[in-house]
Image (cartoon, rainbow, N blue to C red; front, side, top):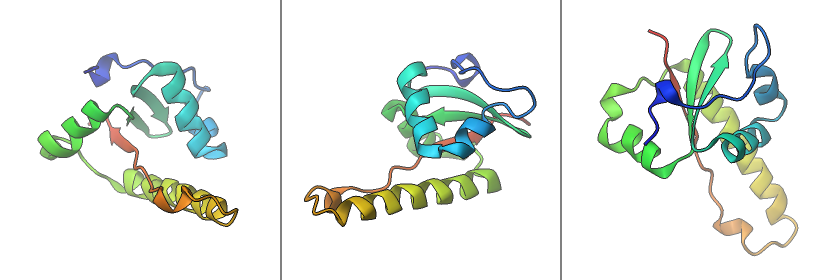
Length: 117
């Protein structure tokens, strides 16, 4: 598993880091970032350094085996709520088009962790 301190990071903008790309299209940003940089990615947001986890082994490590070592702050709660709403509304829109697989879809949370102490 990739250590968060060694995780790759896409190029960000001065001062805002990756926030601009993320706020413009959260789901698209996450998909493109994971596709180009892998399942453990270091990101910079104003006031936060975060690690995006999309690798199943890394997610299990954080959520199951070592959950007490990771904080879940207001930033993570707010972003997860917004991300889940985006995924849910997308699935509902697809379901309205008679897509038989849409009812089997579920939201997939993305774990963001502050690395600043």
